[in-house]
Image (cartoon, rainbow, N blue to C red; front, top):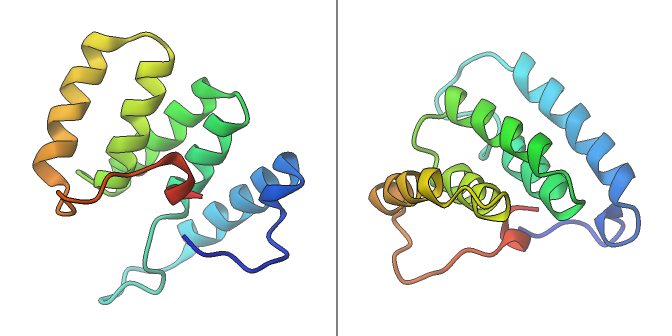
Length: 117
C-alpha cells in the first residue's frame, strides 16, 4: 500500500493507530454502495499496525471484526493467520490458512505485513 510521504507510520506508531481508528470509524458510517466508496477495509491497515506495534490481541479483534463485515477477505484472513502464529495458536492458524488459500487470488504473490499498512 502506498501512503503519502508524511504518513506517520514510519515515525510515530501510536499516531498512526489513532489515525487508523478514526478512519475505521468514518468508514463504518459510509452507506452501502456499488462500487464501494472506499476500495479496501481500513481495518486491514489498523490490524497490521496493531500487530507491528506489539498488540496481537487488539490486532486479532480488528481482523475478526473485518471478517464479520467482509467475509473471506483474504488480506484480513492473512493478517489473522499472522496474529495466531505470533500467539502460538498453530491449530487455529491452520484453519485460517486454509480459508486464506481458498480466497486468495494472488497465488503467485506472497503477502507481507507491510502490504497491509
